[in-house]
Length: 474
Image (cartoon, rainbow, N blue to C red; front, top):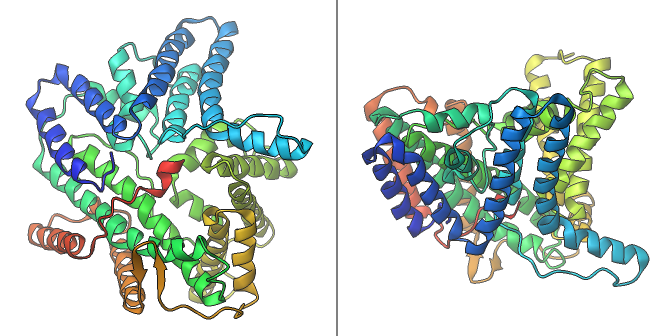
């Protein structure tokens, strides 16, 4: 079920109201059923994959807690192999098959007509964090099967995160939550802000982005490529952080606290800071379960570079089975290593005027992230290099199109101007409130005025073509 759909407009209040009307002992069952209904709105049969991995990880957790030390690692490996195996089959089989067939120059390995289960990468990583934490002794195995299933399937963050840790979320399902008007208002306000970023900004920008990136030969003028890439830079942030805001807000309405997933990443002054602010639940997941186990930064410098490369290349592959994502990960590897070298040999202190240094650091970081997004969005490696080449060479072989069309939708000159105004407003609001809409001070009149303006903008300017969220494909 899409958050930006009529079905969710009915689903959310019904689930939330029933949650508080039911006795505490039945709430887990209510949320589990609701989460199943939410997921089955996509491809119903794929819920069997979730059930399969839930059963394996539930019993693996108990075995990990009870097993002698010499068998714990075996049970962990079996659990991780099941999760990674399911993910690899559905997400990477055809990718590896096509590349192996290309390598041997024969169609020896058959292709499969399978659709990637929605949000598979997200709930797989959340399930893996549970067994790893039980193995490490940081989390007790959950004996209540329904509660564990709900940990994996909790509908607000089921298909696109945040990727929660068991220490943060599991105990909340055992806690009795009482209706709280302030929490409900905070959650609704954050949801409104998420909807604003998604349907008013992201879905509007997608028209221009899709037109250029899906036909880069026609829209090859460097200004078209630059503008489309800038719009995608904003689109992916508004789309993904908008989803996170809605998820965190929906959970908060029922009394649950999910982790913050974005903290104004485009205000970062270096690439390391960017990754501490962007998709925080994933970057910390890779830090805790891959980077640190590989040795982190406690090893010799060459090994630190290797660990960094491993994290970003695997992160790129996690995002999608395409060489474009691997190149995106490689670019961020290079950025991060350069940032490390600068810190080691120059230091982070500004050598000139602090204001000018801060501005140039921000600009360099933004441009680096901006250029990397080309590979993230492009359909093929060839398209990505074509768009990058058009920008860097100031290509003018084709005219600059002020008006673009994609499908039945048109992006006019007024749309461009209006989009820049919306982007400016969005950044001003997020800069003023620092992290998210739940940081607003308790000034009831101003709170209501703010929410009224945002709701009016959503109704008046929202794009309601039921566009899916970008990260659903991952």
